Image 1 (cartoon, rainbow over the protein chains, first blue to last red):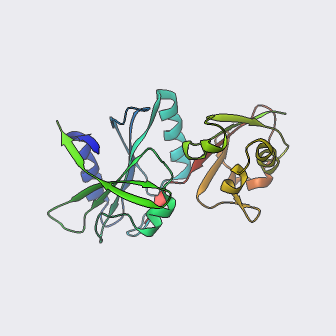
Image 2 (cartoon, chains in turn purple, brown):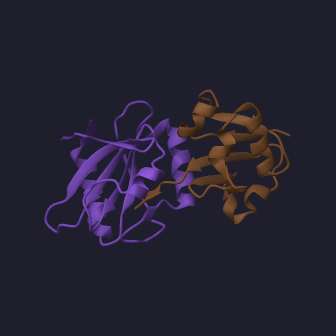
Amino acid sequence: MLSISTRLYEQIVAHARKDHPDEACGVLAGPEGSDRPERFIPMENAERSPTFYRFDAKEQLRVWREMDDNGEEPIVIYHSHTATEAYPSRTDISYASEPNAHYVLVSTRDEDTTEFRSYRILDGVVEEEPVAVME
Amino acid sequence: MAIEVRIPTILRTYTDGAKQVEGTGSTLGEVFADLETRHTGLSARLIDGGALRRFVNVYLNDEDVRFLSSLDTPVKDGDTVTVLPAVAGG
């Protein structure tokens, strides 16, 4: 299960809405081993595309180093789908490379409601998990 | 010559859980070949058909080696190589 604060939840949704119709992406960092997302880090989508996302390699190095220095790890890796449901695509599954992360998918295809779902992706296997949003 | 190589979580199964390992060589490709002698299987996760895999980012100090000379990039004692999986999808 993914436990996430209302504030972080809303920050992800706002980022996805802002970048629509392009895909938005980013990270929630938290203390290593805690499984507790605490810090919102929106990332540049180097692809600037409605169908693909990729972290900018240079920005990723900076952010990953910063997490390392803080004793943090990526607890959540999120991105948006802007025309399809919030379910990992084949590309999402083949690229998934953080075994400890929750992969959050947000869909902005509907103007009024935002789908927000979370998955574990390990060795090509996708497992959806419940999302608990709390104060 | 010792080059420090930082290993991402997903590849630490090849390094007995170590976050960083040391290798020797005068190019990045030689360092990876040297690591392979002690960490069997690591090289195949980084290199495919003689080139860096597309979904792996490798940095020499602060530079993405794709903007240097990729596997032929010269390295020297005290350099740090960082390997990160690319974060991407559709």
